[in-house]
Structure formats: C-alpha cells, structure tokens
Length: 350
Image (cartoon, rainbow, N blue to C red):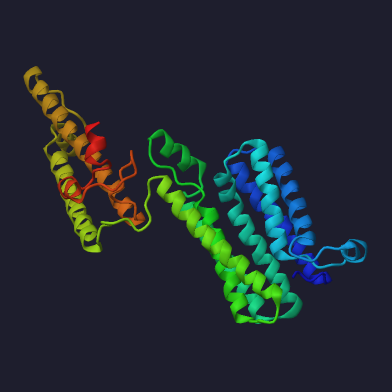
C-alpha cells in the first residue's frame, strides 16, 4: 500500500507529473496531438486514482462513509484502474493498443521508480531503494531499446511497412510488464508473510502478469513473423564465419577502389598537374571511356560495400538471416552462397 504521509505524498505527486511529461514527450514524438495526450492522461489518472481507492479491498458502507478519503492507495489498484481507463481511451480514439503500450512503458517505469524513491525517503528501507534502482534500470533499458533498436518507434514502423517487412510493436510494453513483475515478485519473496491474504494476492497478481506478458510476447512475435527460439537458429560459429568473410571482402573492396583511383586517367592528371589536361580528340575520348568504365565499377563496389555494412549491422543486432518480405528465416545454404541476401529464395523468385 502507498503511505499517505506527507513525504510519500509529495513523491507520489511528482511521480505522476514525471509520468505525464514522459508520456507527453514520447506521444508528441510519435505524432499525437497535445489535446489527445492531455485527454488520455486525465482519463488514465482518474482511472488510476479510482482503482487505487476501490480495487482489491473489502468495500462496504462504512468504508465509503468513513475511510475512502483517508484510506491508503493500493498500487495494484492504480495500475489496473489506469490500465482499464487507458484501454477505454484506446477504443474511443481507435488507436493501436500496442503502440500506446510502447509509449506508456517508459512513463510507467519512471513513475514507479520515483514512487519507491519516495518510500525510501519515508522509511529509509534498503529494499525500497533497491526497487527504485531496479525500476530506474528498467526505464533506462526501455529507453535504450527505443533509441538503439528503434523498437516502438514510428519512424521504424513506417519504414518497415513501406518495405513490406514484418513490423514489431508492443515489445517495449511487454518488456515493462516482464521487468516490473519480476521486480515485484523478488520484493515479495524477500518479505514473506504467509499469514497475509493480501501478500498471497499480490504474489498471484504479479505471477499472472508475468505469465500473461510471456504469452503476449510469444504471440506478438510469432504473429509478426519473428519466431521465439526458432528451430535452426544460426550458430555463433556460422555467424562468425559469415562476418569474417564480409570483413575480408570489405578490405578487398577498399583495395580495388584504391586501384581504380590510381588507374583513372582523370585522377592521374589531377594528381600530377592539379588540373585536367585537354588532349587531342582521340586520346580525350579514350580517357573519357576509361574513366566512365572505372566509375561504373566503383559504383558497383560502393553498392556492395553498403550491403556488407547493412549485413554486419544485422549480425550485430541479431536480425541476420530474416527475410525482409515474409519474416521467415533464410536458408543457411543460400546465405553461404550469397551472405548479404535479405530475402529467402521463395520471395526472391516472386
């Protein structure tokens, strides 16, 4: 339960303000209007406050008459109440639930981090400080996924759509559900109270969320063409072999580009005289033809070098060998022959 002590109350208000700011910033970056964001935040806030006061407690006449104002908020009630209110807003505006979930994930993580920081200031318990650190790490991890992996990003979403690639959304929200549930479970297991019905309820509640997030993650990835733990996943030795081949080829391309530059008659004249000499018509035509042929070869090498760079980046991200059209794994034999292939043989033939 959330203590209504003054210190905790100040941190709780600050947590809501920070939640609103992070949610607003991410939403505007994704193209949502400020009015829509404000409306949805107010609804989510009201849902969370009502849920924190009414959910997961014994409701009776005396509670509504004497205790509802002074009764502490229940954190699980805030999360469920805010979640229900958010779902209503999603349905009302016909938004993508997964996309909204990705925008809410970092805001929820920082909200809980500040909340438990307030608990630590109030009671100076080491467990509260450790939970604050855990939620802060979860927030930074979600931010890193969005910044460096482009998960939950509209730019990446529309780019993959235009290229007819599998679109992965909702991953950040699932990461938040998984991380927050694990943090709560570890906290409860470190404060075992078997005689408390509410302790058993909380443990069951967070285990249920953890299981649900796993099912949702699995279904989401499979539905979007990215299988979890697929059979035939490439071994590290295979990926290492491909990577070494690409790096060797990259060095060869650099050498060929230098050789082309040395053989280019235009570049030779620039290096020796600092300007282009105009020769007689026959020599000028020959020089021009040689220059054009070498430039064409150079263009081909630059395209190949770009493909190698993109492939090396895919290997680094762990997305190498996934067909950009159907999302299935490309056959290993095809990659051994054509290591920069981005489509499986079936899609390539189409």
